[in-house]
Image (cartoon, rainbow, N blue to C red; front, side, top):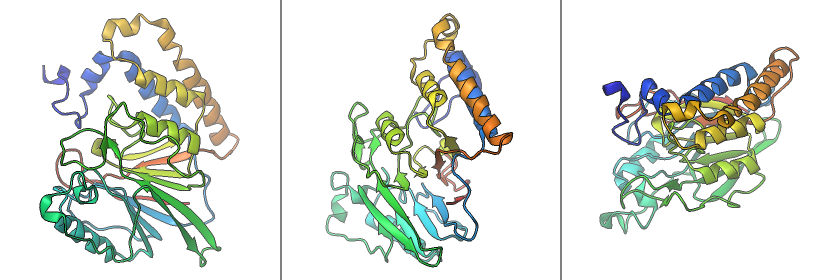
Length: 320
């Protein structure tokens, strides 16, 4: 019965058997969608090595430290701490500041309670943080210029808020029915950094991410979107903002109605058609005709492996 039981925690992934029995439609569509994405290749045009900027992306270190690869910009997408105290956060910031990257950017996560006055511990009220020159973004942007790399520049925007998933000691929470994202992100953002994922992408099957953030990213379409929060969503995903992706998201948003009702809804299965059409067309464009994708690279940079409490994932590297 273990494999057909629901997950014991909203942060745990269901077994493949439970996922299939809960919604064969969603299981099939997700498998099809990600298989076709593999053949479509990169959604971001490759940069000339002489003019590329290397981003090194991490998240969810939860007070722990590890070896971080070299690069031009280090991005930490939140959850530096476990208990959210100023001491924990300062220790992580001291570590990040010691790394050799020329620029460092960070945002807070729900475990970084010190940054949210509503969740801050009473013992930390009069404490302060020394950022050592690290760019801390909280509903704010920074434009970094790289004169030594063809005088390029990139604009980063960061925001920490997440759909509520814990108690009062969790920071920057909002109820899931609240839109905390529409028209909040500047349109000229190149690299978006949030703690929560956009819902249904590098997320758990039931959707821990935010649907309102997903809508905002549809409008914004940055080069790269870095996040964490959902440890089991670790990895990267290319998205192309087409009707195939819309169909995939519709299927993921459907209520799970069980094995037989899923099979008996022919209209729901029709959503597989645009996924196949746009997936095959995109794969031919990329693999046969050598076309370059135009979309966004999503990166879930969680270093903590699942619920083990250990840093089992590697930093994500992208050249833009």
